[in-house]
Length: 473
Ligand SMILES: *[C@@H]1O[C@H](CO)[C@@H](O)[C@H](O)[C@H]1NC(C)=O
Ligand SMILES: *[C@@H]1O[C@H](CO)[C@@H](O)[C@H](O)[C@H]1NC(C)=O
Ligand SMILES: *[C@@H]1O[C@H](CO)[C@@H](O)[C@H](O)[C@H]1NC(C)=O
Ligand SMILES: *[C@@H]1O[C@H](CO)[C@@H](O)[C@H](O)[C@H]1NC(C)=O
Ligand SMILES: *[C@@H]1O[C@H](CO)[C@@H](O)[C@H](O)[C@H]1NC(C)=O
Ligand SMILES: *[C@@H]1O[C@H](CO)[C@@H](O)[C@H](O)[C@H]1NC(C)=O
Ligand SMILES: *[C@@H]1O[C@H](CO)[C@@H](O)[C@H](O)[C@H]1NC(C)=O
Ligand SMILES: *[C@@H]1O[C@H](CO)[C@@H](O)[C@H](O)[C@H]1NC(C)=O
Ligand SMILES: *[C@@H]1O[C@H](CO)[C@@H](O)[C@H](O)[C@H]1NC(C)=O
Ligand SMILES: *[C@@H]1O[C@H](CO)[C@@H](O)[C@H](O)[C@H]1NC(C)=O
Image (cartoon, rainbow, N blue to C red; front, side, top):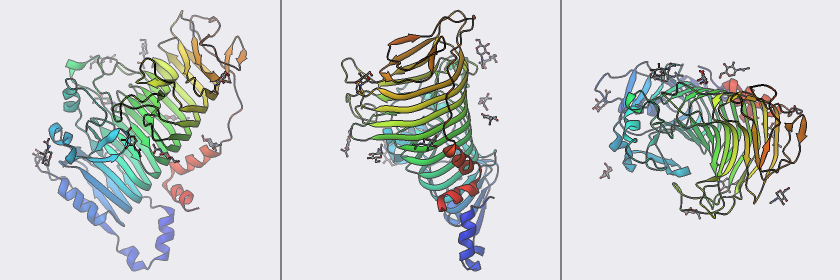
Protein backbone atom coordinates (compact mmCIF):
# COMPACT_ATOMS: atom_id res chain seq x y z
CA UNK A 1 0.00 0.00 0.00
CA UNK A 2 1.21 3.48 -0.86
CA UNK A 3 -0.81 6.02 1.10
CA UNK A 4 -0.88 9.51 -0.30
CA UNK A 5 1.33 12.11 1.33
CA UNK A 6 -1.52 14.36 2.18
CA UNK A 7 -3.22 11.48 4.00
CA UNK A 8 -0.21 11.28 6.25
CA UNK A 9 -0.54 15.01 6.71
CA UNK A 10 -4.23 14.64 7.43
CA UNK A 11 -3.86 11.75 9.86
CA UNK A 12 -1.25 13.74 11.78
CA UNK A 13 -3.95 16.28 12.50
CA UNK A 14 -6.53 13.74 13.63
CA UNK A 15 -6.77 12.03 17.01
CA UNK A 16 -4.96 8.67 16.87
CA UNK A 17 -8.21 6.86 17.78
CA UNK A 18 -9.64 7.95 14.46
CA UNK A 19 -6.54 6.91 12.52
CA UNK A 20 -6.57 3.52 14.26
CA UNK A 21 -10.21 2.86 13.41
CA UNK A 22 -9.54 2.26 9.70
CA UNK A 23 -11.36 -0.87 8.60
CA UNK A 24 -9.92 -3.69 6.57
CA UNK A 25 -12.22 -5.99 4.65
CA UNK A 26 -11.03 -9.20 3.04
CA UNK A 27 -13.18 -11.01 0.49
CA UNK A 28 -12.73 -14.32 -1.35
CA UNK A 29 -14.81 -15.58 -4.28
CA UNK A 30 -17.72 -17.80 -3.20
CA UNK A 31 -17.04 -20.26 -5.98
CA UNK A 32 -18.63 -21.51 -9.13
CA UNK A 33 -22.36 -20.94 -9.56
CA UNK A 34 -22.55 -18.46 -6.68
CA UNK A 35 -23.21 -14.75 -7.03
CA UNK A 36 -20.52 -12.52 -5.48
CA UNK A 37 -22.17 -9.15 -6.11
CA UNK A 38 -23.66 -8.78 -2.61
CA UNK A 39 -20.45 -9.54 -0.76
CA UNK A 40 -18.39 -7.29 -3.04
CA UNK A 41 -20.75 -4.35 -2.48
CA UNK A 42 -20.95 -5.06 1.26
CA UNK A 43 -17.16 -4.90 1.57
CA UNK A 44 -16.99 -1.61 -0.32
CA UNK A 45 -19.81 -0.21 1.82
CA UNK A 46 -17.94 -1.15 4.99
CA UNK A 47 -14.34 -0.35 4.02
CA UNK A 48 -14.64 2.01 1.05
CA UNK A 49 -14.56 5.13 3.23
CA UNK A 50 -11.33 5.39 5.23
CA UNK A 51 -10.39 1.72 4.91
CA UNK A 52 -8.75 -1.02 2.92
CA UNK A 53 -10.57 -3.67 0.95
CA UNK A 54 -8.75 -6.78 -0.22
CA UNK A 55 -10.24 -8.96 -2.92
CA UNK A 56 -8.36 -12.25 -3.03
CA UNK A 57 -7.33 -13.96 -6.26
CA UNK A 58 -10.00 -15.74 -8.28
CA UNK A 59 -13.17 -14.89 -10.10
CA UNK A 60 -15.92 -12.80 -8.51
CA UNK A 61 -19.22 -13.44 -10.27
CA UNK A 62 -20.95 -10.07 -10.82
CA UNK A 63 -24.57 -10.20 -11.92
CA UNK A 64 -25.74 -6.59 -11.67
CA UNK A 65 -24.41 -3.04 -12.00
CA UNK A 66 -22.22 -1.73 -9.23
CA UNK A 67 -20.77 1.55 -8.03
CA UNK A 68 -17.75 1.74 -5.75
CA UNK A 69 -17.81 5.00 -3.86
CA UNK A 70 -14.28 5.32 -2.48
CA UNK A 71 -13.14 8.06 -0.15
CA UNK A 72 -9.69 7.95 1.45
CA UNK A 73 -9.54 4.29 0.53
CA UNK A 74 -7.29 1.54 -0.75
CA UNK A 75 -8.55 -1.44 -2.71
CA UNK A 76 -6.22 -4.37 -3.35
CA UNK A 77 -7.87 -6.24 -6.17
CA UNK A 78 -6.00 -9.51 -6.71
CA UNK A 79 -8.99 -11.21 -8.35
CA UNK A 80 -11.20 -10.45 -11.33
CA UNK A 81 -14.70 -9.00 -11.33
CA UNK A 82 -16.38 -11.26 -13.91
CA UNK A 83 -19.52 -9.74 -15.44
CA UNK A 84 -22.04 -12.38 -16.52
CA UNK A 85 -22.50 -12.36 -20.31
CA UNK A 86 -26.29 -12.02 -20.13
CA UNK A 87 -26.71 -9.69 -23.11
CA UNK A 88 -30.50 -9.22 -22.86
CA UNK A 89 -30.16 -8.34 -19.20
CA UNK A 90 -27.47 -5.70 -19.67
CA UNK A 91 -29.13 -4.14 -22.70
CA UNK A 92 -32.20 -3.34 -20.62
CA UNK A 93 -31.48 0.33 -19.81
CA UNK A 94 -32.62 -0.08 -16.21
CA UNK A 95 -29.77 -2.51 -15.57
CA UNK A 96 -26.85 -0.16 -16.36
CA UNK A 97 -25.94 3.38 -15.36
CA UNK A 98 -26.16 6.22 -17.87
CA UNK A 99 -23.59 8.52 -16.34
CA UNK A 100 -21.40 9.06 -19.39
CA UNK A 101 -23.13 11.88 -21.24
CA UNK A 102 -21.25 11.61 -24.52
CA UNK A 103 -23.19 9.41 -26.92
CA UNK A 104 -25.43 8.25 -24.03
CA UNK A 105 -23.13 5.39 -23.14
CA UNK A 106 -24.00 2.73 -20.57
CA UNK A 107 -21.82 1.56 -17.65
CA UNK A 108 -22.00 -1.58 -15.53
CA UNK A 109 -19.15 -0.70 -13.13
CA UNK A 110 -18.61 2.86 -11.89
CA UNK A 111 -15.81 4.09 -9.65
CA UNK A 112 -16.42 7.43 -7.97
CA UNK A 113 -15.12 9.32 -4.93
CA UNK A 114 -11.90 11.02 -3.85
CA UNK A 115 -8.41 10.07 -2.69
CA UNK A 116 -8.32 6.41 -3.50
CA UNK A 117 -6.00 3.80 -4.93
CA UNK A 118 -7.16 0.63 -6.63
CA UNK A 119 -4.18 -1.64 -7.05
CA UNK A 120 -4.86 -4.78 -9.06
CA UNK A 121 -1.25 -5.98 -8.65
CA UNK A 122 -1.01 -7.29 -12.22
CA UNK A 123 -3.34 -10.20 -11.44
CA UNK A 124 -6.69 -8.52 -10.86
CA UNK A 125 -9.17 -6.47 -12.80
CA UNK A 126 -12.22 -7.26 -14.87
CA UNK A 127 -13.29 -10.24 -16.96
CA UNK A 128 -15.65 -8.73 -19.56
CA UNK A 129 -16.67 -12.08 -21.14
CA UNK A 130 -16.89 -10.26 -24.46
CA UNK A 131 -16.91 -13.15 -26.93
CA UNK A 132 -20.70 -13.80 -26.76
CA UNK A 133 -21.26 -10.06 -27.16
CA UNK A 134 -19.04 -9.83 -30.25
CA UNK A 135 -20.69 -12.92 -31.75
CA UNK A 136 -24.14 -11.42 -31.12
CA UNK A 137 -23.23 -8.09 -32.74
CA UNK A 138 -22.16 -9.73 -35.98
CA UNK A 139 -25.92 -10.00 -36.69
CA UNK A 140 -27.23 -6.82 -35.03
CA UNK A 141 -26.17 -3.25 -35.94
CA UNK A 142 -23.96 -1.46 -33.42
CA UNK A 143 -25.21 2.01 -32.49
CA UNK A 144 -23.76 4.54 -30.10
CA UNK A 145 -25.94 4.65 -27.01
CA UNK A 146 -27.44 1.20 -27.64
CA UNK A 147 -26.59 0.10 -24.12
CA UNK A 148 -23.46 -1.99 -24.55
CA UNK A 149 -21.68 -1.36 -21.25
CA UNK A 150 -18.32 0.31 -20.72
CA UNK A 151 -16.21 -2.14 -18.69
CA UNK A 152 -14.73 0.36 -16.20
CA UNK A 153 -16.05 3.90 -15.77
CA UNK A 154 -14.33 6.47 -13.56
CA UNK A 155 -16.96 9.14 -12.99
CA UNK A 156 -16.94 12.26 -10.84
CA UNK A 157 -13.75 11.08 -9.18
CA UNK A 158 -10.92 13.21 -7.82
CA UNK A 159 -7.37 12.17 -6.91
CA UNK A 160 -7.68 8.51 -7.83
CA UNK A 161 -5.00 6.02 -8.81
CA UNK A 162 -5.68 2.79 -10.71
CA UNK A 163 -2.67 0.55 -10.89
CA UNK A 164 -1.61 -2.65 -12.70
CA UNK A 165 -5.14 -3.45 -13.78
CA UNK A 166 -6.19 -5.95 -16.46
CA UNK A 167 -9.45 -5.93 -18.37
CA UNK A 168 -10.01 -8.99 -20.48
CA UNK A 169 -12.54 -9.20 -23.34
CA UNK A 170 -14.34 -5.91 -22.95
CA UNK A 171 -17.66 -6.10 -24.84
CA UNK A 172 -17.52 -2.37 -25.61
CA UNK A 173 -15.20 0.50 -24.47
CA UNK A 174 -12.68 -0.83 -21.99
CA UNK A 175 -12.43 2.38 -19.96
CA UNK A 176 -13.97 5.81 -19.73
CA UNK A 177 -12.96 8.68 -17.47
CA UNK A 178 -15.64 11.36 -17.28
CA UNK A 179 -16.15 14.47 -15.15
CA UNK A 180 -13.06 13.64 -13.12
CA UNK A 181 -9.87 15.34 -12.05
CA UNK A 182 -6.35 14.22 -11.03
CA UNK A 183 -6.64 10.62 -12.11
CA UNK A 184 -3.62 8.39 -12.71
CA UNK A 185 -3.88 5.05 -14.43
CA UNK A 186 -0.50 3.36 -14.16
CA UNK A 187 -0.44 -0.05 -15.84
CA UNK A 188 -3.59 -0.93 -17.77
CA UNK A 189 -4.07 -3.92 -20.05
CA UNK A 190 -7.14 -4.32 -22.21
CA UNK A 191 -7.51 -7.19 -24.63
CA UNK A 192 -10.45 -7.60 -26.99
CA UNK A 193 -9.41 -10.56 -29.11
CA UNK A 194 -11.86 -12.67 -31.06
CA UNK A 195 -11.09 -16.36 -30.69
CA UNK A 196 -14.03 -17.64 -32.78
CA UNK A 197 -12.58 -19.03 -36.06
CA UNK A 198 -15.89 -18.30 -37.81
CA UNK A 199 -14.94 -14.62 -37.69
CA UNK A 200 -11.23 -14.79 -38.45
CA UNK A 201 -9.89 -12.12 -40.82
CA UNK A 202 -12.67 -9.74 -39.77
CA UNK A 203 -12.80 -7.07 -37.12
CA UNK A 204 -15.76 -8.16 -35.01
CA UNK A 205 -14.60 -6.03 -32.07
CA UNK A 206 -15.45 -2.46 -33.12
CA UNK A 207 -16.02 0.02 -30.24
CA UNK A 208 -13.67 -1.83 -27.89
CA UNK A 209 -11.73 1.45 -27.34
CA UNK A 210 -9.00 1.28 -24.69
CA UNK A 211 -10.31 4.49 -23.11
CA UNK A 212 -12.41 7.53 -23.91
CA UNK A 213 -11.65 10.66 -21.90
CA UNK A 214 -14.43 13.24 -21.49
CA UNK A 215 -14.92 16.37 -19.34
CA UNK A 216 -11.82 15.56 -17.30
CA UNK A 217 -8.56 17.28 -16.40
CA UNK A 218 -5.17 16.12 -15.19
CA UNK A 219 -5.38 12.58 -16.40
CA UNK A 220 -2.27 10.44 -16.76
CA UNK A 221 -2.40 7.22 -18.76
CA UNK A 222 0.89 5.46 -18.10
CA UNK A 223 2.04 2.04 -19.30
CA UNK A 224 -1.01 1.03 -21.27
CA UNK A 225 -1.09 -2.13 -23.37
CA UNK A 226 -4.23 -2.24 -25.49
CA UNK A 227 -5.37 -4.87 -27.97
CA UNK A 228 -8.61 -3.75 -29.59
CA UNK A 229 -10.56 -3.22 -32.77
CA UNK A 230 -11.13 0.51 -32.42
CA UNK A 231 -9.52 3.59 -30.86
CA UNK A 232 -6.74 2.61 -28.52
CA UNK A 233 -7.15 5.94 -26.76
CA UNK A 234 -9.82 8.49 -27.69
CA UNK A 235 -9.52 12.01 -26.35
CA UNK A 236 -13.00 13.48 -26.45
CA UNK A 237 -14.54 16.86 -25.56
CA UNK A 238 -13.20 18.86 -22.60
CA UNK A 239 -10.18 16.73 -21.89
CA UNK A 240 -7.37 18.99 -20.66
CA UNK A 241 -3.90 18.31 -19.29
CA UNK A 242 -3.68 14.73 -20.42
CA UNK A 243 -0.47 12.74 -20.45
CA UNK A 244 -0.27 9.48 -22.38
CA UNK A 245 3.09 7.84 -21.76
CA UNK A 246 4.61 4.44 -22.62
CA UNK A 247 1.69 3.02 -24.54
CA UNK A 248 1.39 0.08 -26.87
CA UNK A 249 -1.62 -0.23 -29.14
CA UNK A 250 -2.04 -3.60 -30.86
CA UNK A 251 -4.46 -3.47 -33.78
CA UNK A 252 -7.48 -1.24 -34.15
CA UNK A 253 -7.57 2.44 -35.04
CA UNK A 254 -4.64 3.90 -33.13
CA UNK A 255 -4.74 7.00 -30.94
CA UNK A 256 -7.65 9.33 -31.67
CA UNK A 257 -8.56 12.88 -30.84
CA UNK A 258 -12.31 12.76 -31.29
CA UNK A 259 -14.75 12.50 -32.58
CA UNK A 260 -15.23 16.15 -31.69
CA UNK A 261 -17.93 18.69 -32.57
CA UNK A 262 -20.80 16.20 -32.52
CA UNK A 263 -22.99 18.37 -30.28
CA UNK A 264 -24.12 21.61 -31.90
CA UNK A 265 -24.88 23.25 -28.56
CA UNK A 266 -21.77 22.13 -26.66
CA UNK A 267 -18.26 23.52 -27.10
CA UNK A 268 -15.56 20.84 -27.15
CA UNK A 269 -12.28 22.04 -25.68
CA UNK A 270 -9.24 19.80 -25.85
CA UNK A 271 -6.06 21.36 -24.56
CA UNK A 272 -2.54 20.50 -23.36
CA UNK A 273 -2.14 16.89 -24.32
CA UNK A 274 1.19 15.11 -24.52
CA UNK A 275 1.55 11.66 -26.03
CA UNK A 276 5.09 10.43 -25.42
CA UNK A 277 6.46 7.02 -26.41
CA UNK A 278 3.58 5.24 -28.07
CA UNK A 279 3.79 2.23 -30.39
CA UNK A 280 1.05 1.33 -32.82
CA UNK A 281 1.58 -2.17 -34.13
CA UNK A 282 -0.24 -4.55 -36.39
CA UNK A 283 -0.86 -8.00 -34.93
CA UNK A 284 -1.74 -11.29 -36.61
CA UNK A 285 -4.24 -10.12 -39.24
CA UNK A 286 -6.25 -13.34 -38.96
CA UNK A 287 -7.09 -12.22 -35.45
CA UNK A 288 -7.34 -8.46 -36.07
CA UNK A 289 -7.05 -7.16 -39.63
CA UNK A 290 -6.95 -3.46 -38.75
CA UNK A 291 -4.12 -1.21 -37.70
CA UNK A 292 -5.60 1.84 -39.29
CA UNK A 293 -3.78 4.86 -37.90
CA UNK A 294 -0.89 6.10 -35.88
CA UNK A 295 -2.45 9.19 -34.33
CA UNK A 296 -5.47 10.84 -35.90
CA UNK A 297 -7.77 13.80 -35.36
CA UNK A 298 -11.43 13.77 -36.31
CA UNK A 299 -14.29 16.23 -36.05
CA UNK A 300 -17.81 16.26 -37.41
CA UNK A 301 -18.48 18.86 -40.10
CA UNK A 302 -20.43 22.13 -39.84
CA UNK A 303 -23.91 20.82 -40.60
CA UNK A 304 -26.29 19.20 -38.15
CA UNK A 305 -27.35 15.80 -39.45
CA UNK A 306 -29.66 14.28 -36.88
CA UNK A 307 -29.10 14.26 -33.15
CA UNK A 308 -26.62 12.48 -30.88
CA UNK A 309 -25.90 9.80 -29.92
CA UNK A 310 -25.91 8.45 -33.47
CA UNK A 311 -26.17 11.70 -35.45
CA UNK A 312 -25.07 15.27 -34.87
CA UNK A 313 -22.37 17.65 -36.04
CA UNK A 314 -22.01 21.42 -36.23
CA UNK A 315 -20.34 21.75 -32.83
CA UNK A 316 -17.88 24.52 -31.98
CA UNK A 317 -14.59 24.26 -30.11
CA UNK A 318 -10.90 23.62 -30.52
CA UNK A 319 -8.14 21.11 -29.90
CA UNK A 320 -4.88 22.88 -29.21
CA UNK A 321 -1.42 22.54 -27.75
CA UNK A 322 -1.01 18.87 -28.49
CA UNK A 323 2.36 17.13 -28.75
CA UNK A 324 2.87 13.67 -30.24
CA UNK A 325 6.43 12.70 -29.41
CA UNK A 326 8.40 9.45 -29.92
CA UNK A 327 5.81 7.56 -31.91
CA UNK A 328 6.65 4.13 -33.40
CA UNK A 329 4.58 2.65 -36.20
CA UNK A 330 4.57 -0.95 -37.28
CA UNK A 331 2.51 -1.63 -40.43
CA UNK A 332 -0.10 1.06 -39.92
CA UNK A 333 -2.40 1.94 -42.81
CA UNK A 334 -2.11 5.72 -42.34
CA UNK A 335 0.43 7.32 -40.02
CA UNK A 336 -1.37 10.55 -39.21
CA UNK A 337 -4.44 12.41 -40.39
CA UNK A 338 -6.62 15.36 -39.51
CA UNK A 339 -10.12 15.03 -40.92
CA UNK A 340 -13.17 17.18 -40.30
CA UNK A 341 -15.86 15.27 -42.14
CA UNK A 342 -17.14 12.67 -39.69
CA UNK A 343 -20.50 11.41 -41.02
CA UNK A 344 -20.51 14.20 -43.63
CA UNK A 345 -23.10 14.41 -46.39
CA UNK A 346 -22.79 16.07 -49.79
CA UNK A 347 -23.44 19.79 -49.56
CA UNK A 348 -22.67 20.03 -45.85
CA UNK A 349 -21.06 23.13 -44.39
CA UNK A 350 -17.38 22.98 -43.42
CA UNK A 351 -16.62 22.39 -39.74
CA UNK A 352 -16.16 25.34 -37.39
CA UNK A 353 -14.06 23.22 -35.02
CA UNK A 354 -10.40 24.37 -34.91
CA UNK A 355 -7.24 22.28 -34.71
CA UNK A 356 -4.35 24.48 -33.53
CA UNK A 357 -0.74 24.10 -32.35
CA UNK A 358 -0.16 20.41 -32.89
CA UNK A 359 3.37 19.12 -32.89
CA UNK A 360 4.59 15.80 -34.32
CA UNK A 361 8.11 14.97 -33.08
CA UNK A 362 10.31 11.91 -33.61
CA UNK A 363 8.16 9.48 -35.55
CA UNK A 364 9.68 6.22 -36.77
CA UNK A 365 8.51 3.04 -38.45
CA UNK A 366 6.54 2.12 -41.52
CA UNK A 367 3.25 2.73 -43.24
CA UNK A 368 1.36 0.33 -45.51
CA UNK A 369 0.21 3.28 -47.67
CA UNK A 370 2.26 6.06 -49.21
CA UNK A 371 0.27 8.81 -47.51
CA UNK A 372 2.50 9.85 -44.65
CA UNK A 373 0.64 12.95 -43.53
CA UNK A 374 -2.88 14.07 -44.43
CA UNK A 375 -4.11 17.37 -43.06
CA UNK A 376 -7.66 17.66 -44.37
CA UNK A 377 -8.79 20.72 -42.50
CA UNK A 378 -11.91 22.82 -42.69
CA UNK A 379 -11.97 25.82 -45.02
CA UNK A 380 -14.13 27.65 -42.48
CA UNK A 381 -11.36 27.84 -39.88
CA UNK A 382 -8.07 26.35 -41.28
CA UNK A 383 -5.62 24.32 -39.21
CA UNK A 384 -2.93 26.56 -37.75
CA UNK A 385 0.38 25.86 -36.04
CA UNK A 386 0.92 22.34 -37.40
CA UNK A 387 4.57 21.50 -36.81
CA UNK A 388 6.63 18.43 -37.77
CA UNK A 389 10.15 17.35 -36.85
CA UNK A 390 12.17 14.16 -37.26
CA UNK A 391 9.56 12.18 -39.13
CA UNK A 392 11.20 9.07 -40.54
CA UNK A 393 8.57 6.71 -41.90
CA UNK A 394 9.08 4.21 -44.66
CA UNK A 395 6.41 3.29 -47.20
CA UNK A 396 6.08 0.29 -49.52
CA UNK A 397 9.00 -0.08 -51.92
CA UNK A 398 8.59 1.68 -55.24
CA UNK A 399 5.88 4.08 -54.08
CA UNK A 400 6.22 7.85 -53.83
CA UNK A 401 5.51 9.37 -50.43
CA UNK A 402 2.61 11.75 -50.32
CA UNK A 403 1.55 14.55 -48.03
CA UNK A 404 -1.94 15.99 -48.26
CA UNK A 405 -2.47 19.49 -47.03
CA UNK A 406 -5.86 21.14 -47.26
CA UNK A 407 -6.61 24.39 -45.48
CA UNK A 408 -3.57 24.05 -43.27
CA UNK A 409 -1.73 27.34 -43.07
CA UNK A 410 1.85 27.89 -41.96
CA UNK A 411 2.74 24.21 -41.63
CA UNK A 412 6.27 23.86 -40.30
CA UNK A 413 8.77 21.12 -40.95
CA UNK A 414 7.40 19.36 -44.00
CA UNK A 415 10.27 19.43 -46.47
CA UNK A 416 10.86 18.69 -50.09
CA UNK A 417 14.43 18.27 -51.21
CA UNK A 418 15.57 19.85 -47.97
CA UNK A 419 13.39 22.94 -48.40
CA UNK A 420 11.06 23.78 -45.59
CA UNK A 421 7.51 24.15 -46.75
CA UNK A 422 6.23 27.07 -44.76
CA UNK A 423 2.87 27.48 -46.46
CA UNK A 424 1.43 24.07 -47.08
CA UNK A 425 -1.78 25.03 -48.80
CA UNK A 426 -1.56 22.76 -51.81
CA UNK A 427 -4.14 20.02 -52.12
CA UNK A 428 -1.62 17.31 -52.72
CA UNK A 429 1.94 18.06 -51.80
CA UNK A 430 4.21 15.24 -52.88
CA UNK A 431 7.68 14.85 -51.50
CA UNK A 432 10.57 14.52 -53.93
CA UNK A 433 11.38 11.17 -55.49
CA UNK A 434 12.77 8.68 -53.08
CA UNK A 435 16.47 8.10 -53.30
CA UNK A 436 16.16 4.42 -52.44
CA UNK A 437 13.56 1.71 -52.88
CA UNK A 438 12.34 2.44 -49.38
CA UNK A 439 11.14 6.00 -49.50
CA UNK A 440 11.47 8.07 -46.39
CA UNK A 441 10.17 11.44 -45.49
CA UNK A 442 12.90 13.19 -43.58
CA UNK A 443 11.63 16.33 -42.00
CA UNK A 444 13.57 19.08 -40.32
CA UNK A 445 14.32 19.27 -36.63
CA UNK A 446 12.85 22.04 -34.60
CA UNK A 447 13.66 23.43 -31.19
CA UNK A 448 12.00 21.36 -28.49
CA UNK A 449 9.26 22.74 -26.30
CA UNK A 450 9.99 23.72 -22.73
CA UNK A 451 9.65 20.46 -20.75
CA UNK A 452 7.71 21.86 -17.81
CA UNK A 453 4.49 19.94 -18.41
CA UNK A 454 6.33 16.69 -18.95
CA UNK A 455 8.30 17.12 -15.75
CA UNK A 456 5.14 17.86 -13.85
CA UNK A 457 3.28 14.90 -15.19
CA UNK A 458 6.04 12.38 -14.95
CA UNK A 459 6.18 13.18 -11.28
CA UNK A 460 2.42 13.29 -11.09
CA UNK A 461 2.01 9.98 -12.82
CA UNK A 462 4.85 7.82 -11.63
CA UNK A 463 4.33 8.13 -7.95
CA UNK A 464 1.06 8.34 -6.13
CA UNK A 465 2.73 10.48 -3.48
CA UNK A 466 3.29 13.15 -6.08
CA UNK A 467 -0.42 13.35 -6.76
CA UNK A 468 -0.93 14.64 -3.29
CA UNK A 469 2.04 16.99 -3.58
CA UNK A 470 0.55 18.51 -6.69
CA UNK A 471 -3.05 18.63 -5.57
CA UNK A 472 -2.36 20.13 -2.18
CA UNK A 473 -0.05 22.91 -3.32
C1 LIG B 1 -23.11 -16.31 -11.36
O1 LIG B 1 -24.25 -16.18 -10.55
C2 LIG B 1 -25.46 -16.56 -11.20
C3 LIG B 1 -26.60 -16.24 -10.28
O2 LIG B 1 -26.46 -16.89 -9.07
C4 LIG B 1 -25.39 -18.02 -11.57
O3 LIG B 1 -26.56 -18.38 -12.26
C5 LIG B 1 -24.19 -18.25 -12.45
O4 LIG B 1 -24.04 -19.63 -12.71
C6 LIG B 1 -22.93 -17.74 -11.81
N1 LIG B 1 -21.84 -17.79 -12.76
C7 LIG B 1 -20.67 -18.35 -12.47
C8 LIG B 1 -19.65 -18.32 -13.54
O5 LIG B 1 -20.42 -18.79 -11.39
C1 LIG C 1 -36.26 -3.95 -18.04
O1 LIG C 1 -36.16 -4.31 -16.68
C2 LIG C 1 -37.22 -3.80 -15.88
C3 LIG C 1 -36.87 -4.09 -14.43
O2 LIG C 1 -36.55 -5.45 -14.25
C4 LIG C 1 -38.51 -4.47 -16.33
O3 LIG C 1 -39.59 -3.97 -15.59
C5 LIG C 1 -38.74 -4.17 -17.81
O4 LIG C 1 -39.87 -4.87 -18.27
C6 LIG C 1 -37.55 -4.57 -18.63
N1 LIG C 1 -37.72 -4.08 -19.97
C7 LIG C 1 -37.58 -4.88 -21.02
C8 LIG C 1 -37.78 -4.24 -22.36
O5 LIG C 1 -37.31 -6.06 -20.93
C1 LIG D 1 -4.87 -11.17 -26.01
O1 LIG D 1 -5.69 -12.29 -25.92
C2 LIG D 1 -5.39 -13.28 -26.91
C3 LIG D 1 -6.47 -14.35 -26.81
O2 LIG D 1 -6.59 -14.82 -25.52
C4 LIG D 1 -3.99 -13.81 -26.66
O3 LIG D 1 -3.67 -14.75 -27.65
C5 LIG D 1 -3.02 -12.64 -26.75
O4 LIG D 1 -1.73 -13.06 -26.44
C6 LIG D 1 -3.42 -11.54 -25.79
N1 LIG D 1 -2.59 -10.36 -26.03
C7 LIG D 1 -1.86 -9.79 -25.09
C8 LIG D 1 -1.04 -8.60 -25.47
O5 LIG D 1 -1.83 -10.20 -23.94
C1 LIG E 1 8.38 3.12 -24.13
O1 LIG E 1 7.23 2.38 -23.74
C2 LIG E 1 7.46 0.99 -23.68
C3 LIG E 1 6.14 0.34 -23.34
O2 LIG E 1 5.24 0.47 -24.39
C4 LIG E 1 8.52 0.67 -22.64
O3 LIG E 1 8.79 -0.70 -22.64
C5 LIG E 1 9.78 1.45 -22.96
O4 LIG E 1 10.70 1.28 -21.92
C6 LIG E 1 9.49 2.93 -23.09
N1 LIG E 1 10.67 3.63 -23.53
C7 LIG E 1 11.19 4.62 -22.86
C8 LIG E 1 12.40 5.26 -23.45
O5 LIG E 1 10.74 5.01 -21.79
C1 LIG F 1 -16.63 22.36 -22.09
O1 LIG F 1 -16.38 23.38 -21.16
C2 LIG F 1 -17.01 24.62 -21.50
C3 LIG F 1 -16.63 25.62 -20.45
O2 LIG F 1 -15.25 25.84 -20.48
C4 LIG F 1 -18.50 24.44 -21.56
O3 LIG F 1 -19.10 25.64 -21.99
C5 LIG F 1 -18.82 23.35 -22.55
O4 LIG F 1 -20.21 23.09 -22.55
C6 LIG F 1 -18.11 22.07 -22.18
N1 LIG F 1 -18.30 21.07 -23.20
C7 LIG F 1 -18.63 19.80 -22.89
C8 LIG F 1 -18.68 18.84 -24.00
O5 LIG F 1 -18.87 19.45 -21.76
C1 LIG G 1 4.48 -6.14 -41.10
O1 LIG G 1 4.22 -6.60 -42.42
C2 LIG G 1 5.25 -7.46 -42.91
C3 LIG G 1 4.94 -7.75 -44.36
O2 LIG G 1 3.63 -8.23 -44.48
C4 LIG G 1 5.30 -8.71 -42.05
O3 LIG G 1 6.37 -9.52 -42.49
C5 LIG G 1 5.54 -8.32 -40.61
O4 LIG G 1 5.47 -9.47 -39.80
C6 LIG G 1 4.48 -7.33 -40.15
N1 LIG G 1 4.78 -6.88 -38.80
C7 LIG G 1 3.93 -7.04 -37.80
C8 LIG G 1 4.37 -6.54 -36.49
O5 LIG G 1 2.84 -7.58 -37.95
C1 LIG H 1 -2.42 -16.10 -36.82
O1 LIG H 1 -3.52 -16.65 -36.10
C2 LIG H 1 -4.06 -17.80 -36.73
C3 LIG H 1 -5.33 -18.19 -35.97
O2 LIG H 1 -5.03 -18.41 -34.64
C4 LIG H 1 -3.02 -18.91 -36.72
O3 LIG H 1 -3.55 -20.03 -37.38
C5 LIG H 1 -1.78 -18.42 -37.44
O4 LIG H 1 -0.77 -19.37 -37.34
C6 LIG H 1 -1.29 -17.12 -36.87
N1 LIG H 1 -0.22 -16.58 -37.69
C7 LIG H 1 0.95 -16.32 -37.19
C8 LIG H 1 1.94 -15.75 -38.16
O5 LIG H 1 1.23 -16.46 -36.03
C1 LIG I 1 -28.53 20.33 -27.13
O1 LIG I 1 -28.94 19.69 -28.33
C2 LIG I 1 -29.48 18.41 -28.13
C3 LIG I 1 -29.78 17.87 -29.48
O2 LIG I 1 -28.61 17.88 -30.24
C4 LIG I 1 -30.72 18.51 -27.27
O3 LIG I 1 -31.18 17.20 -27.00
C5 LIG I 1 -30.38 19.18 -25.96
O4 LIG I 1 -31.54 19.36 -25.20
C6 LIG I 1 -29.73 20.50 -26.23
N1 LIG I 1 -29.31 21.05 -24.95
C7 LIG I 1 -29.43 22.33 -24.67
C8 LIG I 1 -28.92 22.74 -23.33
O5 LIG I 1 -29.89 23.12 -25.44
C1 LIG J 1 -7.38 30.13 -44.45
O1 LIG J 1 -6.12 30.27 -45.04
C2 LIG J 1 -6.16 30.90 -46.30
C3 LIG J 1 -4.77 30.84 -46.90
O2 LIG J 1 -3.86 31.45 -46.04
C4 LIG J 1 -6.65 32.33 -46.12
O3 LIG J 1 -6.76 32.95 -47.38
C5 LIG J 1 -8.03 32.28 -45.47
O4 LIG J 1 -8.47 33.60 -45.19
C6 LIG J 1 -7.96 31.50 -44.18
N1 LIG J 1 -9.30 31.33 -43.65
C7 LIG J 1 -9.61 31.63 -42.40
C8 LIG J 1 -11.03 31.37 -41.99
O5 LIG J 1 -8.80 32.09 -41.62
C1 LIG K 1 1.10 23.16 -23.74
O1 LIG K 1 1.14 21.83 -23.26
C2 LIG K 1 2.39 21.54 -22.68
C3 LIG K 1 2.36 20.05 -22.36
O2 LIG K 1 2.40 19.27 -23.51
C4 LIG K 1 2.60 22.40 -21.45
O3 LIG K 1 3.87 22.15 -20.92
C5 LIG K 1 2.48 23.86 -21.81
O4 LIG K 1 2.45 24.65 -20.65
C6 LIG K 1 1.22 24.13 -22.58
N1 LIG K 1 1.28 25.47 -23.11
C7 LIG K 1 0.37 26.37 -22.83
C8 LIG K 1 0.57 27.71 -23.46
O5 LIG K 1 -0.58 26.15 -22.10
